[in-house]
Each structure stands twice: as structure tokens, then as C-alpha cells.
Length: 375
Ligand code: ZN
Ligand code: ZN
Image (tube, rainbow, N blue to C red; front, side, top):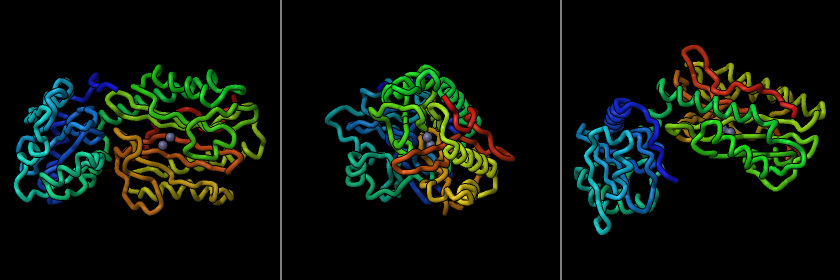
């Protein structure tokens, strides 16, 4: 897959993020951050570089010196074409035969306390620890603080992603009907995800009938039947790398009244959690709002996972909306609200929106009807 260098945020957005990273690093008593390709690198310098066996690594020193990028010479063009090319970074390019880990070491003071991105492959972490840094700590506490609260441009990207996946759900009647396999339906949905403005289809779940009871079912050769309830959970990234993620539950023909009633309770539970979102409340209180409603209806045991996950440049990131997370929500945080009910061997349902915390509540990125849609 090639790098996406099409649209991006202005260079000063990344300059601000690098400055804030330095502030947080100092507060955490760290001397340098080492960031290999992945969402952290994309967040900090706008580079969608991929991780290979050849080392690419951004080094951000806490002393305020210019950050450096250690990068294979053959990858330089991609870096320069991205926002990173406008940031005035010190480029330390290398060719095969050179030890890039020594190049990283050359940017660090002896005894530096170093933190690394959590997605750094062991392939790079181990030689870095050996030759350059000693055993590093995780940069996630610093990056989580930065990435968890989205700025206006990021919220706009999430809004575009949400509208694009809503358009795919709006077309579900074109794809989903009795007599087709989950895989056939899924292939059409994946194509529609791209047609409606995503860079790619990152995931497509078509959970029909009993498969709907498995929250992480992908798709299979099962033929969809009249009377099935079908869970469709889909998403992908839009430029510059922000993800959509939305689930709706469909019925093929009129469902049994008991099933429709239980899905109506799920709809109320999902709405209750969305209504609980505002600045100053805890993540776990949002989980509890919907869970309590399901429990009161006798469906507590059918809801077998957390209510939601943060989203942005990764599909799953902080904050997690889960019991035990007393993180206090702030305006700009973005996450899913996706309660589900699952009956093993029988059927399942899930309803999922991405919401962004506003000054007095939240804005939903997804606006399709939430209840059971009969096709
Ligand atoms: Zn989902
Ligand atoms: Zn999700």
C-alpha cells in the first residue's frame, strides 16, 4: 500500500503538536521520544510512512533542540512530500550497510531517559535498547494526552468519516438480502466504503443470524436467510487518516416481536449512554448509563463488552468507555457508544455511533436511524 500524502493539516498544526509533546515530555521527566511509523508518527509530523525492516525513527529531544528523523535514503521522497517536509526537521538519512541505531544514538545524550511509541516493532526496539538507549519506557502517557483531545480540524475529519459511513449504511438495501452469502454482501459493502469517500475499507463485519452473536465475527460463506437479524459493523479511514466506525442492525423481513422488543431496549440503552456524555463526567458513568437500562430489562448478561473506545488516527485508542475508567471527559474527546446484546447460537444486535464531546454534551458523527431497519 502506498503512502497517503494527498490532503493534510497545515504545517503549523504539527509544529504546535511537537511543542506540546516537548512540554508533556518534560513534565514526565523524559529526555527524548523515539517514534517509528504508525499513528503517533502521523499525528506528530503528518507522515504516513510505513514500518519496514529498515528503520525510520523520529527523535524528539526534550531540551528543545530540533527533532531529527533517521530515515532510509530511499524513503526520503515520501517524507518530503508529506507535511513533515515543511517542518524543518534534521534529516539523518542512511543507506544499506550503515547502522541506523547508531544514528539514533548520535542524537541522544548519554544516560537519556527515552520513551518509545507503543507500536514500535520488536525488530527495532531490541537493537535500539541494546545500542542506543537502554530499556525505554512507553511514550503512550505523553501521546495519549495529546491524541485523546481532538482539535477542530480533527473533528472535521471525523465528521467527514461519519458522513461517509452513514452513506454506506443508507445503501444497505442494495447489498443485503436473503440468498446472498455474508462474503458477497461484505465485498459489495467494502467497495461502497471506498466509493463513498474512504481511502480503504478497514473492516467489514456481516454477522447474520447466529453469527451476529459473535461481536468480532468477520464474514463467512453463510447464506443469509429470510428472518435473519444481521449486524453490520463497518469503517475505514478518510484523508488524512481519521477513521469511521458505525454499526447498525438489520432484519431480513419482519422479525419476531420478541426480537424487535429487545432491540428497542438496546436502542434506548445506546441513546441513554449518548445522553450521558458531557464534559466533567467519567468514562465509566457513560458505560453505566446504558448498561443499567439493559440490566433493568433483564439483558445485562447479554451485553458482554465495554460500551466504547476512542477513535482518531487509530480505530481503537483512548479513552475507553468502560467500568473502572474514572477518566473525566473533556470537550474534543472522540469515542464510540456501541452497546450490544448477544445470544450465542441464536442472534445478536449492536448499535454504534461515534460521538465527540462538546461544551455541553456531544455531537454524533453518525446520524442514520438507530433502530432495527427491516429490509
Ligand atoms: Zn464498530
Ligand atoms: Zn467500534
